[in-house]
Image 1 (cartoon, rainbow, N blue to C red):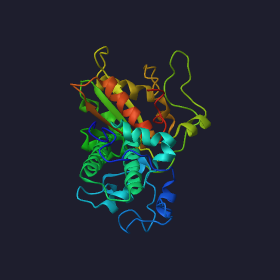
Image 2 (image 1 turned 30 degrees about the vertical axis):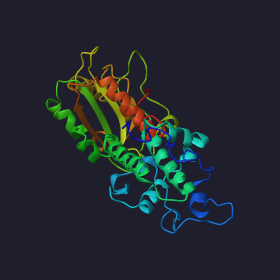
Image 3 (image 1 turned 45 degrees about the vertical axis):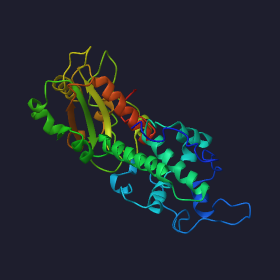
Image 4 (image 1 turned 120 degrees about the horizontal axis):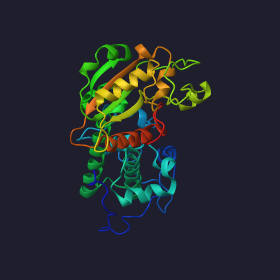
Length: 312
């Protein structure tokens, strides 16, 4: 992903000038003016007749992205579904000119700034500009494809297996591999769940697993389908996906099993039927690193930790 926006383009005088800061709405409805005080942008190149609706990272899907052969007007409309100035303020230009965006938010900010940059120049992107813009769109596409927590379909596409309810998993534990890896707990309905006043999970060292309802409601992540991202095993851990998930399930059933992390899911009413579990082995990757990367990407998309995760 490091090939986008690698450098500030300098071979044309004034090329790396930063356009004035405006909101996406002003960018669409206003337009930069020449010294003569009139707009000089041909319709269909820079002026957009209808303001595109914002698309939050959590709602971004592959079908929203411009096709590889999309024209500049189409690309520009997509770029303006995200406001880089709202996300980063005056640092938006610095991020775009620095290059190598590290997450989805930075990638979209770079694309937003490219739209602003070329609007400021009063022309379509040149050949070099188009290469960078196309690369940005490809990076955004790859990033969206790599986020398994966006949906069950995305998780399946990323190689996750299982997809069993809690009740089903309790009777099919033999299907969970005795290997290291990562796992996800999905929430099936689109609505906010009902929470139990008392957690059925087991106590740990005389500590009650029950949390106040206000805390649970505050932890809930609107729009997110994954409630918990977990890991099993690694260079310094003997656990496997099988042993870790077995312990997790025993804790939810009231056992004193030491799986304190993720206990919030057990305070969801009907957790036995409304939660879906899936896993993926990581024979070549350290589960801790993969888990950390997924949680970091989750925060980038939803601005907070998964519901039942306590920390990175």
